[in-house]
Image (cartoon, rainbow, N blue to C red):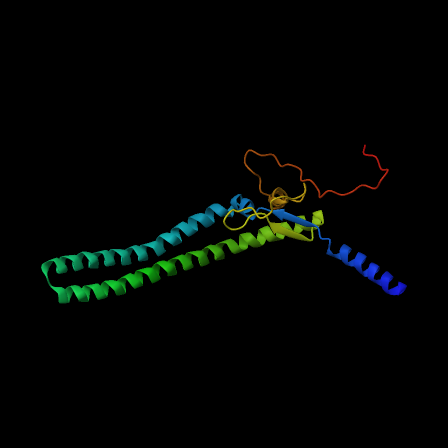
Length: 193
């Protein structure tokens, strides 16, 4: 029985140690916003989006022409022709909605394609900083909509600035601030100089 209790204590103490993880966090959106590539990506997306929007606008203009024609034919009393135009208008409206949805998906896909190399660079820099600081995990401190996920964290665990520095990005109007290492406990009796 004693051996069983000792074994359980050993298992409990080793499992609690193995579950203790050192976690850091960073604001990916903030890092992405200072990336030099961001301006070019935004310009490319604007051009690409303009082309997609042109197709949607053309379909919208066609539909508006059909609606105008429908109203004129209906006002003239040609119900049979108005019904034909109404049916064609419904088809054009469906095409317009599908084209708008496809344009949104294509724009999102293009954005992902353009961002992937930048995100890979950020991940590599983040891994390097995490390794230097001894973090087992790094969380994004905000979600895609800008809502904070990490509401509190210990000093030194926010590695956003350290990742920017690791990427070699010089921020305008800011001097490179030394990054603080994750807090460590000093052995008892050791005095700071």
